[in-house]
Image 1 (cartoon, one colour):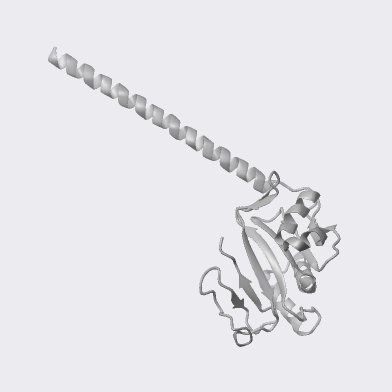
Image 2 (cartoon, helix red, strand yellow):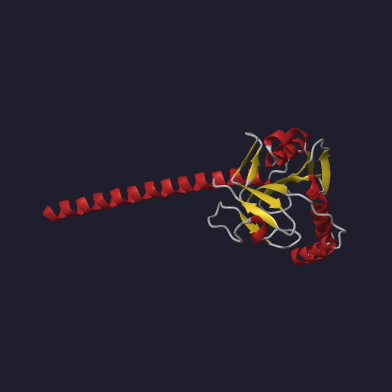
Length: 221
């Protein structure tokens, strides 16, 4: 009788453990499903092709607030070709995210940078590598064929591997903001800047002495 009771107790304990394990498995599966649903929703938002109005709304977020309503905006048509979505009335140019590229990136820059930027886009369309593009553009800039700004000119950029424009809130999510201030031929001596950031959010000078020297500033989150 005593052994029988022990076996009954062991059996009940085993059934309880099995039930707990089954419940845990269901809970884990439920959590996995929820995570997959969240990932699926996020991916759908990231992969969504934006309308003309949405491209404009997202691109101008890279520009200073007071310049957004009158900035010129480039975006992409149904064939993925870069086109003018809106003509501008001030000195700012914005470019919407390229839906055919991984990650997210919208930019705004002063119009004095347009010859430099436009020539870079032309070389990319010709199939030039990044190294080829930089080399060719440098030669053209030094020869005065590609005109560089005579005064400091800023490019503003929103970027992120998992970034996207939330069409419901009208905000950019999962992205960082950066200022790139172009100062052709600037050096450490002429600016007093470090050649690498003391901390991640500190300004520093990139390509000192070069035609495309610029100050990098990535604000803290």
